[in-house]
Length: 235
Image (cartoon, rainbow, N blue to C red; front, side, top):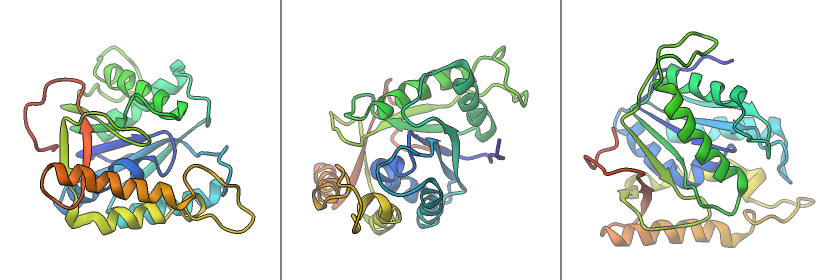
């Protein structure tokens, strides 16, 4: 297992590019503010219709540089195989305990893609297990309890509990998304997918503008909290 580093904010996604779609503005904003932020993808999206695992790894590195991440980790769990088995959960628990974040982001629990829904559920379970002293991990990491979990949106929207102004880092967000050329820019010979047509990126930008309009700024990203919020700052 690769070495993980302590962070302030850790964002989980089922696939490389998930976090970039839904919360990269928030990550960039916190990175610019001097916070340590990272992404942990559960799978390498090996079943994607376009691109390859090797190309996706390079794209993830490029996206990470755009966002100022301290790392974009990958647990290499099976794409379309997020079962929540004890073996999968312990890997996620180990990541949380090694990174020791104050805040974790996960996909919203209602989404058209089953892997996004599964990831949301697994993150919630891993957070709980990470805080239990008697749950053991291979590296014998000490237990860790985060301060707050937030859910970000991928394909769906709902009522937001927090909207973060990302106007000043919006270029970084778009750079991180467009780093995944194999997924968002359809080339000759590639398969048409729900995300490589012009309407998908337009939807993302329109949604960010809608969230921004709600708080009187140009662009925003929305989050949902599973419990009452004590403060507006994430970390």
